[in-house]
Length: 240
Ligand SMILES: [Mn+2]
Image 1: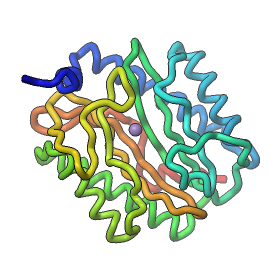
Image 2: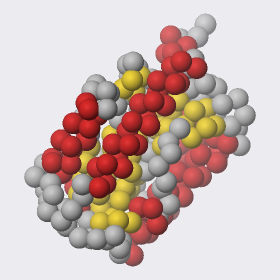
Image 3: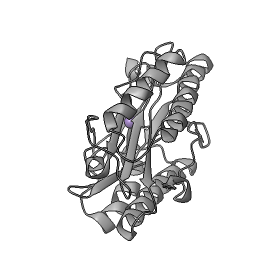
């Protein structure tokens, strides 16, 4: 017999449409927030802007309070937006999502305020590669959560030791973190029709961090990426 969490993980067309609508609204809000970035703006001002725009766009119940982090604060996995001001050379992290008819979206993007330095670039490209490897594994038919997690984790460990400090991803539905869990000890098998995040990250205390998070629909033979915001390095650089 299937557990209720496994039944709930498989989304109907209608459920999926709600998740996608929530995600598209998030993408619009992210674009707008990028337009508000300027020297000395605070994390909390940007977070408040994001919340206001979700309300204005008819999706006032957020999946979780927006995470906005500048500079060293990007090393905090769940940074609480504060009065930290944006400076040239900062890493910027957004982790945002909202709900449509109770269905959540979840997305993280990391940007550079000005040309990134060598170390910032190295972290970004490694996290992106880890994400791509995990997604490729899903594309090839791997459905064991811990194996998908391992692909990303082992790749990052070679370069950044144990600084990938959370699971690779989680299911998304009416709850922002639901079954299945993509993490090292998970016994979960991803069923076709479930929506999961793939969100590797590297966090270096005193320096900063990078996380890139997409929502993926698991299909019978592969996957569909539900996140439409580009994540190549060039797209992550904001001209100052
Ligand atoms: Mn997430």
